Image (cartoon, helix red, strand yellow):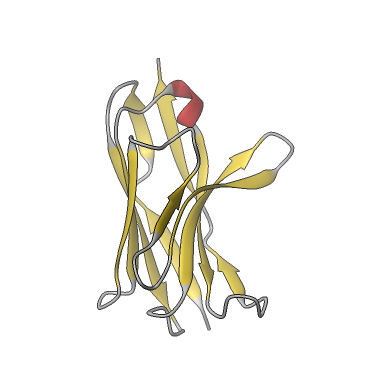
Length: 118
């Protein structure tokens, strides 16, 4: 079955950097739209960054210029390079894969905690 496994979270001081990874298996990911979400108050997952199979990216306004999303289709892995971290970046980050956009074939990882101390 489809599995998404995040890694790379942790505790970092404000201004520091982290790189999250999402290893995918059990499906065809080279054509998937993939993204990173953060759990917001109210238990809603909000988009942080997304990347299409062709490498087109989209970012929330709060992370533009600081975070970079990328993917390696040969390794079925997606990354989120997080620089200049702020305390408001703290949260659980989830990997998301939409294997067939528009067809509700969506999967989530278990989440990884990012804590930024000020």
